[in-house]
Length: 260
Length: 277
Image 1 (cartoon, rainbow over the protein chains, first blue to last red):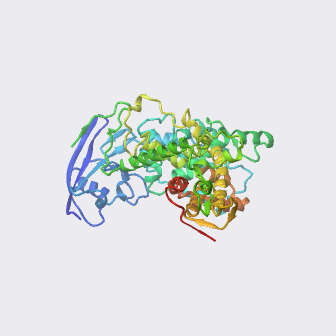
Image 2 (tube, rainbow over the protein chains, first blue to last red):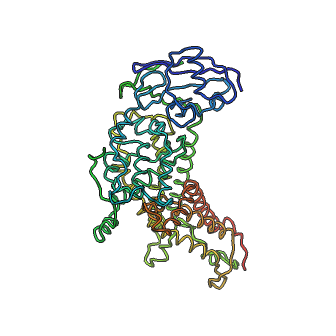
Image 3 (tube, rainbow over the protein chains, first blue to last red):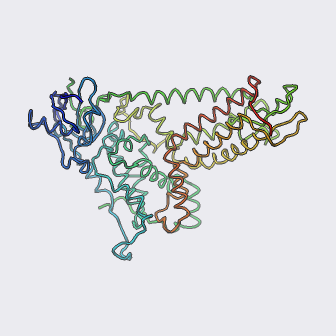
């Protein structure tokens, strides 16, 4: 392990900026967030970064390390510096920059408000009793720490900037956790098909590849949701079956206006 | 060190260069393009060739041969030229038959990832910007033509199931041979039989690990406790599904290998390595 490394940190705001170089002393087990903290403490207290738990559970310290979206607190420095001993740390590129490594992720919270919460009939006795096999699938989705790395790497939001048409992988996971919930009474397919824009996803799986919680975002959430939407909108055979036999206990759809 | 100005397409966003990644992110797309293009060229050549796709006629064309295996190239399966008596000899059945495996693979969720990344660079790799200035184009993903047809993947699945049955039937046939008198007998095991076995197994693993199959078999349910059989089936398919991409490539390789082997044997370039029981 090198005794000192060079950390190039993006310094700037909405008007632009540039990389600034800092020499940092290393220690065993050091992560990129340690390096940023060392810079703040010893060299430049004006470097802005968002962090909280330093345990990969709060999802605050998302950044791009050598171009790869990562949690700074979970990224060992030796995995990132090469022979030149340089690590580059940049802010998330999908959201508006506030300062240095801090971006404005509030679009995500506004998007979350468009999703109706779990809706259970008043006739279902409280507390809810569910079989483990029924909730096991959605428990995976509950691991999400909302670091928004998946939102950041999703090319629909990042490159195409289609925040007007697609909720992003984080909220596909959220919708999957609700639509697959055994007690939820809302059919979310209409919202998925229209406002949430599941059809925009072209399954390139970057969200799944970098999820720090290892949630199988594409395989277990987005693709099953696409298939559920296909049941409703792209399967003439199922449509005929529904016409003959009715909805057969299926949840009833709600319009996308009643989300709060 | 680079300096940037903020992006114009959305005020205040951090700069979006091609990529800051320093690893060899381009290797995977290049390998995928090379493999699929080579396979496509070979498959096209074989489909138009309309020859050397079965080995049973070797007993007539090679005097002195004691046994000819009953191999049929997977590119020419199901054997329309046998099933439809009036099939014109000049028309290669493979040109028609290729449509269905192509539609299954083309709409496959794994393959979509592969070709969107490798061929369309949409994106070429994670956190690597797309080359074209797509800010001017309204991205619509799989909501409009042509890619909206990917939503009909399950129909391609229904059709490919017929092919899977035929691949197993061809494996069964590969245990047979035609003797010098022209009668078909059981009790043959050749290198081709082994390749056909691999092909049938890997194609089945690929098809039955399909995401649409996983949904249809049980993934659409929310109350597994009420349908334990669906749960069990869904769990099995889920286990297979984790290696769907691997099965995609392996089954593609064995289909190609089976055809190459049949061509080599049928054209007399190599004899079939076999034992008769």
